[in-house]
Length: 258
Image 1 (cartoon, rainbow, N blue to C red):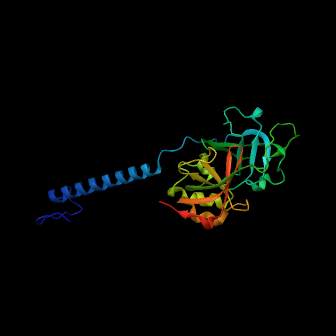
Image 2: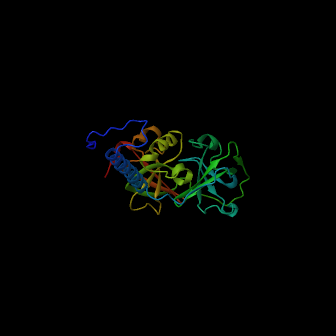
Image 3: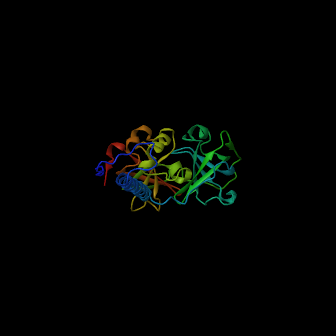
């Protein structure tokens, strides 16, 4: 409601506004600034603290191990040649530059010992390498990095959580989750970045970040984009590959939860 000016009128070329109008303007501006500050604080609180994750952008390291092509490209690390400062996870997911998976780069190297270069991405839930294009090369089979090709069956589980793209969540973006990141996550998943469920509550074999495939073990891609960054419940059969857990599930059975 405008102030009762009792005939006061302000003209732009005057040096000062009338007293009543000036008081009203100061109060309105103060209220507006307080509202903006409260909105910013609420938004920051809703996002939660940033994760202690790392993306070594522009830093190239060399890695060796066995390349696994399915269900997602990953490197079974030769721990005897793990670069200094790299986290000691048995399996490193592989991705390409930007919002692209590494399926094309990994093609033809399945099950082979390889050497490759890339930038390290890692957090408490796993590690990943953003490949230098064309850097994968085959090696003589001397490293003791054997792995069970089909993983270890963990049975059927029902989980609640939020679908994220693993690359941004593990360290490329902060925050790499939530509604503010939904558009970016959808583009990454569409480009071949492995989608994952960030589990709310009980973990699966100690893992809180669960990679997702369909019931045939294939990428989900477009079929689950509408569920990204929403609180959901899903059921599927889990398998463990080293420290990575993969859930085979059907998007038609997903449910929104509170």
